[in-house]
Image 1 (cartoon, rainbow, N blue to C red):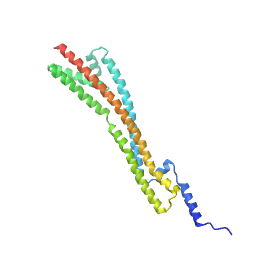
Image 2: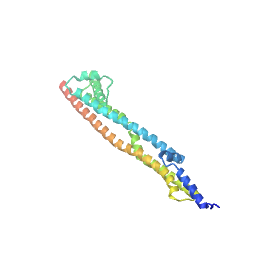
Image 3: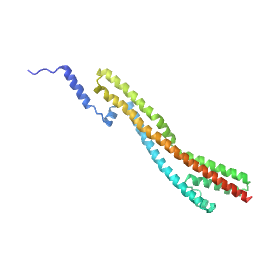
Image 4: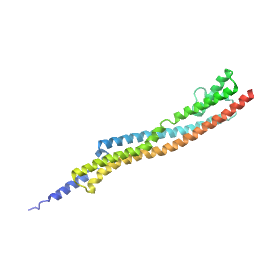
Length: 242
């Protein structure tokens, strides 16, 4: 007669089959996670995708800004007529540096035609350049707040998903009354996956935020330097005319 299989062996075989059937791939961990953890993962992945879009756009834009600034400064310091340069730029400056120059020239021509004093004219031109610099920098710094927020909160959001997943894992362990590592590990892996996604979203955002902020500060200093230099040129011109 065949020897009957003990019930404990049957239970071990069933548990082993259940463990083998558990998919520990990234997709399997995502699909087997709790609905709250899934929503957190999806939100972090969407935020990471949007942050990379911002990073690439800013990188391309900054490279273009420095190239355009160099071209404009070459034209400005070439010794040609400022009126001719202003006519060529017109009312559609291609970059912030050209916009600062156009704003100053526009105010110069407008105020000169009204017969204002040289002191008032210089003050109005400097104010126009300052306003233009502030407006252009506000445009360039758009979406930078998102990178800063994502870099500072994504890890904590992922950690919340991990805590939630571990709580559910412990509840499942308590209900199954099985504390073996093979049973505990899949649930813990699902929970930690949320923190991993949070780190993937946060680390590039933090690095890119500081790098882009540094480049934007350099460009802002360039705008301020040009404004001061152009203001000095206007001041000398006004002294010669009076």
